[in-house]
View 1: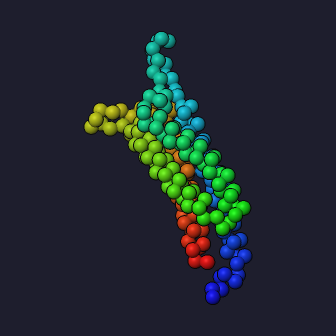
View 2 (view 1 turned 90 degrees about the vertical axis):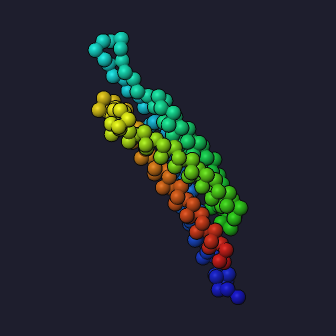
View 3 (view 1 turned 30 degrees about the vertical axis):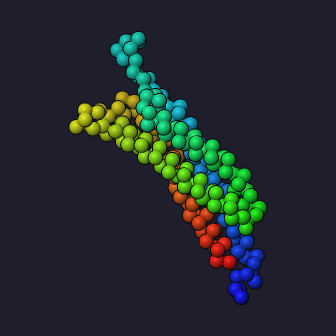
Amino acid sequence: MKTSIQLGSAPKAANRGLSILDFILRLVALVAVLASAIVMGTTNETLPFTTQFVRFRATYDDLPTFTFFVVANVIASAYLLLSLPLSIVNIVRSSATNSRIILVVLDAVMLALLTAGASAATAIVYLAHEGNTQANWFAICRQFNAFCERISGSMIGSFVGIAVFILLILLSALVLSRRNQI
């Protein structure tokens, strides 16, 4: 006879509180990742040259890596939006296990996708800022300052989303492990 079974309502209240935290973290991640996709997707800068007819332009879709970054963030945003009802189910039914397992698996997939997109884009942002003299790649951020500021800022939102996904996975693992101990 376990004493935790007799106390019954305390673990349910704790699980409900963790489920509410899960919902709030999903909202935070949604805002961060969606803002990151919007900022990157709307980034462009045009520099005039010596004449009015020759201009240099930098847009996010000039590089496939940035396009992948935007697509990964949009997919993660859509997933987070679609996962909110399932998170609400976990609040209402704090003893639900299957929905929590589904969320853990899909959160891990989204974490991998978002990490891949952000990591690839970070490499390009680094090259844009620093260049690579051995490969004759020049740092473009001296000329396209506003472009580089926006793409760097976009990276912050994506990495916030990655951190929140890690917290969501750990939180779900905690709730599932507590459920098995009761």
